Length: 628
Image 1: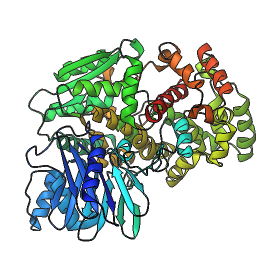
Image 2: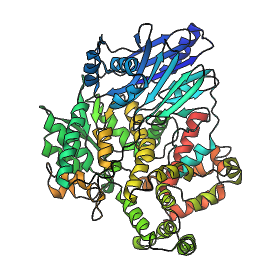
Image 3: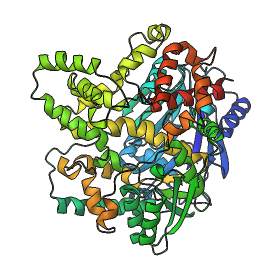
Image 4: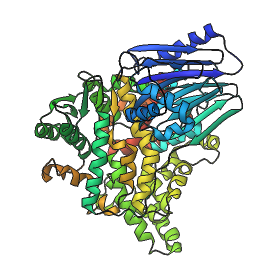
């Protein structure tokens, strides 16, 4: 795992000045690659690399040069590199290292852009094709590894993190208002946008070619649909274990100590179970919890660790919350309102004490139907709407949805505002309303007129709608999954895991994010995903090979923090300071009086907007960190 940075200028570059700038960019990525650094500079290109040594510790240095042909810098792991290497050898290619980096480079020389279809892994890389004067950049299918860039016609700049790009003098910190609206709506900023106008993210499963004619960007991977795939439970389990065992085995290849996260949930337990089956030695497992019973999974994780006889370590988080938030925000680069970044940081920090690589259970919810709190209501709403006349939907339910109270004090079975609102709109709008953290009616009230004018009618719904419509022919559960796999997973979950693990120089590998498993899970029939209000039916059945039912069938807890309690106690002064901060971005984009009114309702328990206020606090701290 590494950090990469570089730039290309076809007008020609000053080698000495360019190398100095390149080193400055790479210095911001030391946490991604603390073990070594390397640089390549020629007439047009500058490529820099910070290395975290995982495989081929002796000869895998980068940038890696194929003399007179091409140069590569690479962040990530290619799990099937040995298989590709054997194929390349059959074509007469010779190899000087044992690294996956050399395999990518020679795959490009053999197959060009087609090499991407060969790679199974997590990656972001740049190849400077010296012969053809092309810069080729690519990002893995699901988006585990980040890649940011900026382009101003003559010059193309890229890096693993935004902070490296901000070393370039012409890249400004001007805020992208549409990205800001997305942040307060979703809690994250979807690619290709970033918080800064001058910086873009390369989307998952995409590549870029930059040459003297300009820039070309294309998508090279889509989830494959198999509409006639309706296996029995027994056949599905057999197929799953074939792929899953191989996915885990490939991710256990390492020349440094390797362990696993163990939360006590289905996904991480299944990963640890398979690792224990494959390995001849004890697996290292790490768990974190809070001194708050509702958010503490340590007892469950401990019980599972004892069953698999792992070398288990656990840590109870009692965070110095304001200080840890400052560290987290620095490593995130742009605002991310996912509060589970805190426990993620702590479990990564603890794991790094005894290993350099850790396997995780990320991906199970999105591929196998784990988000039942969203998926099941969406299924019911979509099915019910089939029997409701269009006029009734638009008039009656929209009207009821608008006037129905939004109150946390109502019994749960009477909190129906969102359901009524969803019954009055299209399926894709209903999914959007379930996904966002800031309801549209509240958004319209608390945004300032100045901010609304700057948005020029932009609506964050525009980003999710085309993704949902792309699979309109599928069942509601599959549509929701498809959106999560292409939106929430890469733009929130994987950003959080990558930044928090890289903050402590830990590589995290997720077997359930193997693209073969994603496609397998996505194409399962609904009854093998969700049944009787339970999700991940197939994974539950798979885990029964290893654990008793009473452990598997425990309610899902999630990897979360007591944010509601923190916001109204420890963090209350910071939240109120953010709301009322003068001459800030927050004071420009929000109606402060209405924000204060909303905060009073939060404190009284009348309404619960904790996710929004958490996001507001994170943004305020981010603004202080990057603008003061």
